[in-house]
Image (cartoon, rainbow, N blue to C red):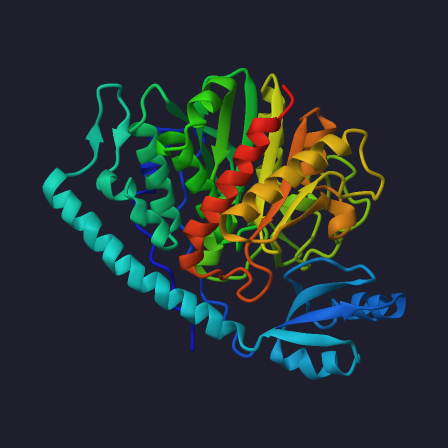
Length: 448
């Protein structure tokens, strides 16, 4: 079955009124073909010894492996998508594996069906709201409140996934509805000119920066980041008032907007940004940051999912966030939310030698994992990136640490492989609830 396109509304320009941008927002190009994954398997490969690791890595390009996880180390496992035309060749390698997903397209179709059903109800609410309240409203402070703002503000937002345009309207609504408490900003523009739109909350001297969807297929990251925004704006947690006096939060739900649009229009499994190199689409922004770039755990192959780019900071997405971090006076924590694997990790990724303040960062990660587990029993592992999962150079967390951020983290949200990147929507709220408690544990214990 061919995967149908996610509908995208045409009201994204409202975001421009709230965040600065130097380019007009492009309309998504209509793809000539939508990627499908019929009979693509996702398998978990156990790596018992160096010989098996060598067999795996020496065949990854020829067999077109799409690594869903990147734990390519002896004594661990790695999750890989394999196309049907290469599966017999993979089996001939005699590697030990189990099948997580028998047919990836079936999972995507189920996700799409749930998305469509949710969107019918969501769009009906929007239309009803527009009939009652009219179109966009210009508030006294000159900020535009999108049409249907009451629907975007409703907690039912977390019952489903959303289009890129709706995410921008959601963010605009939060900014416009909280004058004096929140303001909009953009870290810069993506390769195709979309704003890396964010919201700033609080007035404290200690800055906290976090974002979702650096890897575009990881939709749960955006939803969890938005849940955290709502907790800071309207949550009932008694600690929030103190947080807003102690910290200023800079939050970007969609760090890689071009890639996110690609996942909704032409390839649900697209991971990278939208830059093309030698006919291959995308650079991995989380292998492109300018600290120890290209020193291991990334690829020089432009078609690889972890392609590091031709040089450090060749991606505007990573460059913009790096410059934004450097522009702030005292960043006490930075969090890069990903999925999947259920991990709360610290630098370093480029080396197994732990940084001098690892005990402090690891202590915070331990508190986060404990607080998270106490909500729904979800188990997270924690530790430094290199020793917890794999070597990864050119990462955001390593870069943040290199410029003096006190407690940078790379977080892998739910699940552990049953659904992978197509996490069912009924897990959005519990994911948000447990991640909020993890974030609160860190905010309660950061050294400032």
